[in-house]
Image (cartoon, one colour):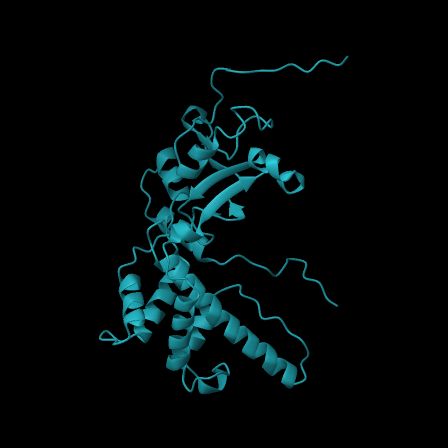
Length: 274
């Protein structure tokens, strides 16, 4: 058994690429511009998948479901926003395609006597190149005879699974204390913060999805602390009965500007050892 000193579960590079693209054209960016970047919901990773899916569906497609999907993807603004259908739809189709290809490679390795292997999903590029080139010896096994037929079946399967829905129906956010899982049911709401539908995506600069979110949004420069911005989920109090337990959460989720430096003290408490 071997171990990887540097790890092997790398993040998809599309988020870093989007941040780099914005910074490359930024001119005299200030704190507000940097916060806007942290709230950017562009899902660059899905652009190539969108093009691939659209290309697989004819412009005059007679099947109403496929035609509807094509229209939705063509009209997509590239962002993970509440009213957009594309993020959930592309995400479902992409996952099904990646799964089929990985399983096909793993079965081949087993049949070749290479043992059990796990195909990583570090980057989408190898998968996209494979699907675009369509070599027949790499076509996953199943009830299809061509790559185009395989792609169409993946699209229809995603529709049947209910993936054709606004992103807000999927991206509903509930933050909770680690103690919530141990608390009695009547107490759970006290330890949870229900944000409801939210924009954001795990591949976008604005990371905000169930189970994944930015622990803080910070913008500050040395010597400009007074202009700095700090957004954190929850609040400054650890007492769920305090109004300050969740008072900062909405600003963190929506990107409202809150100062980095502390303001006037509005509440305090003293600990005394008896």
